[in-house]
Image 1 (cartoon, helix red, strand yellow):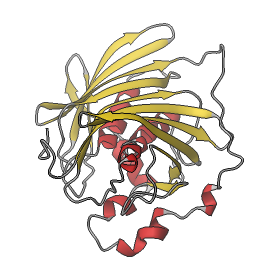
Image 2 (spheres, one colour):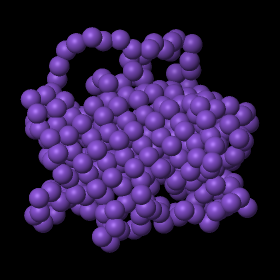
Image 3 (cartoon, one colour):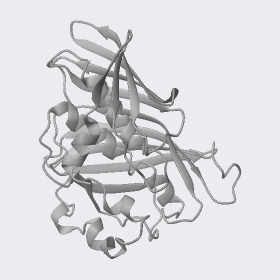
Amino acid sequence: MTAADLLTMLAVLDSGARTREDILTGPALPTPHGRSFGGQVLGQALAAAGTTTPEGRTIHSMHGYFLRPGNSSERMTFEVDRLYDGRSFSTRRVQAYQEGEVLMSLISSFQEPDSGLEHQEGIDLAGLPEPESLPSVWEKYGHLAGNGQASWVLNRPFDFRYLESDIILDVPERTNRQRVWMRSRDTLDAPPMLHAAALAFASDYLLLEPIARQHGIPWATPGMRFASLDHAMWFHRPFRVDEWLLYELDSPTAQGGRGLTHGRFYDRSGALVASVAQEGMIRLPGGPDASGD
């Protein structure tokens, strides 16, 4: 999947239907397991909201709940409700539908450029390996390209380079923290709104990994089931997803079949450009309700 494919996927279209809300549609993103990828729903919903906001207002926060699994082979419909347009802020509610059922409900907020107090928690990048010095997923697992399941890892539109080991086949070290350099595979010639939608899309790939890593559970575990339950994101400073970002993640708790993860995105200068939080469901084979929701 190339950056051009990513832009095509995020290019939600006006359906031509007219109600009190704006109605848009987004293309399908097939997956090996047949369920819609949560990042796709997030990215398309955010892109849909962005088509309705006054010019010059940029996304600063979004909060979404995943309600039902979607079919990855079918298009989605997005209903955008223009909740509020004030002097500085705009608020949008987006509902994602398939076959008349709501899959996800999201509220996002946009702001005019403004000045004010500024600080951030710092990070020391000086001692970290440069992303160019780390192996790509293709370099490590390209020999599995003939495996249909491996295509979901190898054909992502983002290049993820782990400072700690990945957990695709095994978990060498149990810890609830990880750091990954990431960027789109090629140049993403798009406005800032679509870079934000692309980051929301990409953020969902790795958010459950610190939970699985803490418990020594690789993604290749047969019968493991996982799903995003909610997803919140805050956008702090300008960034581009086709330039390297350090994705720092940690999971402070897991219980009741659910786990919480926090994530932070830093550019190569050390600027904190975005933050994310998600609660997810992980069910292991043989456990209670292993068949699903």
